[in-house]
Image 1: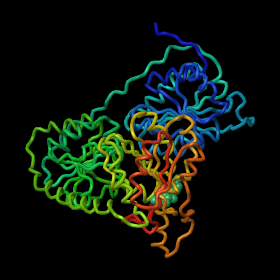
Image 2: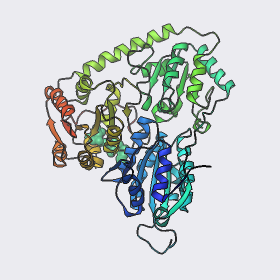
Image 3: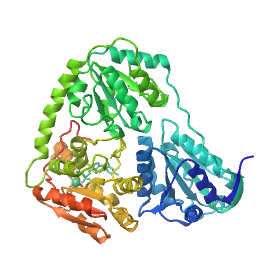
Image 4: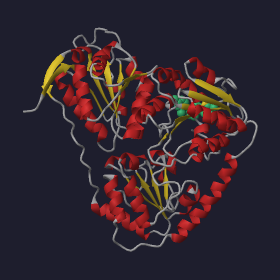
Length: 540
Ligand SMILES: Cc1ncc(C[n+]2csc(CCOP(=O)(O)OP(=O)(O)O)c2C)c(N)n1
Ligand SMILES: [Mg+2]
């Protein structure tokens, strides 16, 4: 006979989530969700609270991304849930297994005009894998199990449950919740073999590996496949660092030469979206390796598109038995392009200009960041430069907002990162515009003793919008911010510390102080507003 547990709705929900390895909640208070707090408080389950619900969901997403397990945000009914929708949507685009539990006005008098009464489910259904109202207390373990299983099943993503007031406050006696394992789905072996044959037979193949390689625990298999078939590898998203920077097949800067010269582009675990030119690589054929059939692009005709567990697919590539074309010349050609680009970057990162160029900020940061540091990008041009100049040494250490491109992830991601890795450096790279979305949550970080370093690229503008608008119209509107604003003093006022840096030579010592501070610390770098990140497209 299964063990039984008795408890209120909050206790039953938390017991079910614990079974799936959930170890903390991120939240902002509201009476509708008090039983979830009671369940946590009485059992020593950590509660981290924030100043805006977006930060709670972003924090849960950072946990999900970094630890590859469900991250939990608890949001109160109505505005609590609606404030979390950009976070849910980001998690949906990023395939992050985020679980949002919402409070909900009482079901028994639905329609009578209770406080914060709104049906959340149709609002969040388009951006979740599973959205459901739990109608009975004793149904909570089943509902949580179904939701979390959906979140963890490739292609992963966020899920939402709301609990009407009387459902979460009532008591029930149920079977003790158990976690269902998600079995890996094997791709069609013929399709896998065809893809492997195409790679082995190509003369100038390239692999582009994305976040699902990290999430699907396929990093080792990727390396094995690349080495066995001798294919250069580029990465994006959480896949960055999958091959360590010194690896002979790891490339970052020769992308244009690679994608322009390739005869086969193998895209693994990332969509063929705007970041990859929508999968149009000129004359090159495309192999798209995805973790589930729904991820196959509809707008591209790939030569092969195996869909299934990425580790199994990549291991099969590594074990490909047939002949293979020698790629040594191709690899050498790309290495030359890579080295030339590296030399150009090194020069930019040493720039001793006044005002400071963003590239120099990253030149200095590279000196102080440890190989396992978590770096978080939240901003426009300043973050594009971070992507260009920072080279994550390990996978699962780089957090960008992903293809939804939502500003405001900064402090939430920082909280989730600090909770996930208490002993590592956590560094947020933030535009001054982006700072406006979440900087108040420094207060949450200070109060809960979660130190992080925030480096603001303070150009006094919404740079990624101002420069393109100028280029398009010859003028710009709604693109200016207060120049030289003291964001470091904002952090000081919230209980942290910081300083403003105006000279390139002062950057290094300021960063050293920041990482030694032991409290949230903001380095407010006055950067050159004339500096625009070079882009092929003006729309961002
Ligand atoms: C929530 C949200 N609002 C607006 C945008 C559009 N947007 C993209 S980048 C950007 C400018 C960011 O400015 P800042 O953070 O100062 O970075 P900079 O480009 O100046 O380096 C804006 C407004 C967005 N991506 N997300
Ligand atoms: Mg700016």
